[in-house]
Image: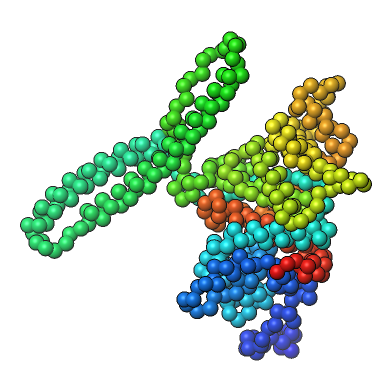
Length: 475
């Protein structure tokens, strides 16, 4: 005991503590998440992670890919996404030390491994869904789909409109011509004064403007290609509409010709051209990816995930449903059946942002039983009265959702899929993609969803059962 001004305190001996060995197993709880992952990861199918290193004979031995897989999975489970922060945690966090031991990877190794193996994590995602199904966490009684905007690694201040690009190109060409003229004059003057010595300050200034000109012209070309594709799609739509009206008199004004040129206000971003600017929940505008998930209602297991550059969800119902069925098939999870063994449609709940007659029909054809809101209803507003006989597909869907079974199913949507986004964005703090390019962003989002599913397995007390299930998985 020590005393200070008459007060007795517990002993503190930092000089002794810093030389003591701290074992993660002795300091962390027995059922900690890291020990669950250390049991599961060695039993996963990881051959795709090992393949790039098998024929490489140069350099020293690489880190074991299984260790780096476990490290990334644990980091994404606990909300550490930056490779630098993961590397720092490997030096001072007992749970991370339980994974890497004394041989700790640096941030560049972690970053390169993640970029190289983003596609390989797709198979791991399926294996974890299989684990969840075998553990009884996937029931397919209500599969809910929703999307959320997540900011990309691109600043809106690094973007330019097509109209401004045209002005910038003209200005840069004039400046380059002026600099070339000045350089010629300066070369002649310097040749007389310097002889064979150099004086190349102006060429460096010229190169900077030429690089900027190339960048802007490439961005203009992207917008022009996009505008031509949109114009061609509009021409086809008008041609189909005209064929449908054959034999009938056109009403209204004749439509204006389709213009192939981009609009002056059309924008593109220089840091990540694949992302589009979208309105966020705080009414601001950012370059975002529209992250989609399909979540099972039993224990909030994410069955399918994707990221799209579309600002709204109108066209996403069918692709997400197809991805859900693909994951279920790859994971070997059977669809629900009745008492006689006949396969039953999977109930699916989606908000009004997904509704269209074509989307509802596509879900039904894929084997889902869709319950989709057809419009927004204000809080505390009286429910709209239904017509006696629904005449349109939209009215029939609205009437279906208003039935007692429809109300019960749709009411569950807000406690199935919406909390998942809260857990990912608020609890674990994933609010911005770190990688650039739509393909890499999709892989990063898959890693986030993979961490979410592993946490569900662990938190529902399935560590023992999940570990026993992995023993049945082929290696």
